[in-house]
Image 1 (cartoon, rainbow, N blue to C red):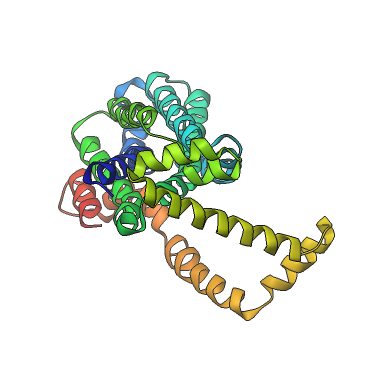
Image 2 (cartoon, helix red, strand yellow):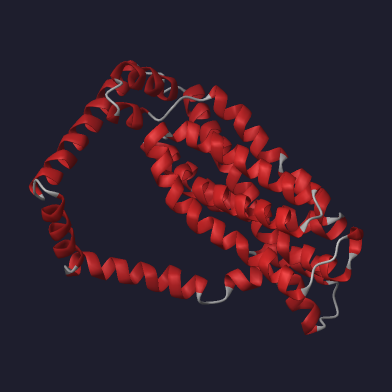
Length: 306
């Protein structure tokens, strides 16, 4: 595999994760905007209840987006799904930044959460399906690195600029992602599932640059798909038979042990540990602590450390 093709894979992973970079802006936005909204800075003022909605509605959008992202990326392709996510994220931030109406801002916030949530589903799939195994561990780390970097930059900009101006800056990154994604190719695995083998070969050749490697990878993909099809057939012919087989599967210890462990680590350890509340209300919490440091710069330091 040539060096320039590795660069193409890294560039594809970078482009699709630019929406996750903007996700860092989306999550942190409420933290530094809420004190300004409650004080009426910039000619717009929210009540405590309104700021609570402003912070939490992003999570509601992320739930719908996570369900939407899997369906759309399977239906129309990973590349198109990611481009739609980037466009939706830009529209959401523009609504938040341009309008002063509470309902419109909430809708913009909901849209932003929806599309960054959708992108969080489509991005790892696209990166995994376009990156060669030799660099997949590197490109796979982009999602969390980009998210945390966006979170930190957003906190920094929130410390020196008005929060509405930060909304406009946040739009720059998904727009760059859209431009680069138009230069990239679709996921070869997805194309192969759609029986578009010639396109799958061309796209994989774009990412690999070696026809021998491409043929070997495509053969492995076909074998995997055949194995998956056989597994589906073994579950039964009817929907009820397949459902019963899946219910039996989820009661087995080989499924339950890793499932419960992951939920203990991620669900209880992270979400129940209070991170979302801290992320959405960092500045408010720091102000209530009455720390002898400017809460805006303290938030930047905490985000950078993270």
